[in-house]
Length: 390
Image (cartoon, rainbow, N blue to C red; front, side, top):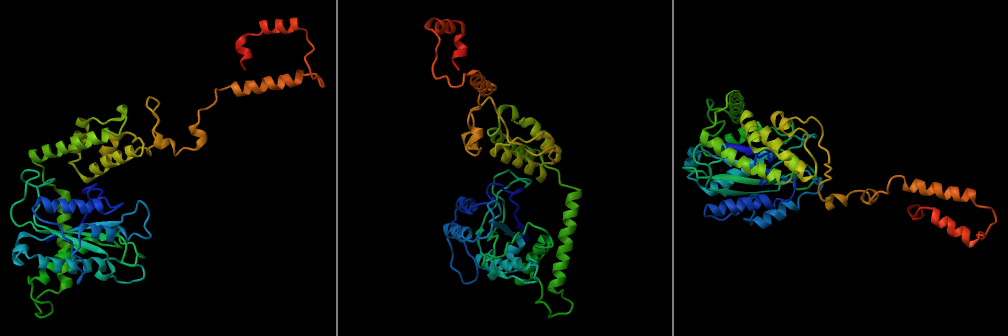
C-alpha cells in the first residue's frame, strides 16, 4: 500500500496545477479512465451520490473563499494498494471506496490546528475516482507509456484546500508540524491492514500489536527506506535516459518558444545538466521556473548555473527588447507617461530660452512693428529657415 500527496511543482506541473480551477485535473482523470475503456465517476463522503466530473469541479471551485489568487485551491492524493492487497479484497471497488473514506478521515485528523481542534472527514470537501490501469512513466521499468502488468487499481482523490466551512486552510504540503506526510502514509498503510484482516482485531490478543504500534513501525520503515534511497539511487537504464531526454527536448522547445532568440536554451547543454543532476526534482523545478519567468516577460539570470545549482544569482528582471515589436499587453500595465513618446532632448528647454529672450528684448508698451517693409524683408532673408521653423 502506498499513499502519496502529489506536489505539482515536481509531479505533473500542468495536470496537477492547483493554483486555479480543478477543471484541468478533472479532465485528466476523465481522459485516463476513457483510455482504459471505462468512465470516470466520482464518489465522496458516506451517503453521498456519485458525481460527474463537472459536479466535482463546481464543488471544489466553489469552496475557495479566503484563498489568494496564487494559493493552492485543492490538493491531489493517490492511494495505491499492492497487487497482494488487491487480491486480498478481490479488487472490489466498493471495498476500495469504503477504505478511501476511512483514509480521508485519517487525512483530516492529521492536521494539527493551533487550538487543538481535531478535524474529521465531515470537515473536508473532496471527491475520488478509481482507475484500473497504470502506464510506465519516469523511472518505471518497461517501455515508457505502455500499460503495466498485473492488478494496478488505484484511487485518485481531489480535496479542497479549505475546510467545509471555508474558515481553515488545509495544506498537506506545508510544515511537518502542521501535517506530517510520513505519519499520514503510515496511517493509510495500517488502515489497509486493519480494515481487511491482515491482523487480529486490535486489543483482542495481547501478543498482537496495537494500531499505534503498527503505525510507529510503519513510520520507521518509511523513514529508513527514504534515507536509503537518498544514499543510493537505482541507476537509470539507457532506455529510461533516452525517454527522459526525448521529453526534455519537447520541454526545452516549449520554453524556447517563450524566450527571445539570444536567451534560448541549448537542448544538449540542458540534457547534460539533467544527467549530472540525475534528473532530480530540483532540476525539473528550476526548468519549470525558467518557463514561468518567460511567460511573465522576465529573464532568468545565468539559466545554466540555475539549472545546475538550483540557486539564482540575482532576481529575474523584466526584459527590455529594443529589436522587437513592443509587448502591448505589458505596455498597458505601464503608467501613461511611460507609454507616450518622450520629447526630443533639449528642444523644450531651447524653446523656453527663446521665449524668455523675446520678452526681455521687447519694448514695454509697444503694440506694433514700426520697421519699414525693406527692414522686415532683410531679416527674413538673413535668418536661416530651419531656425524660423520653431
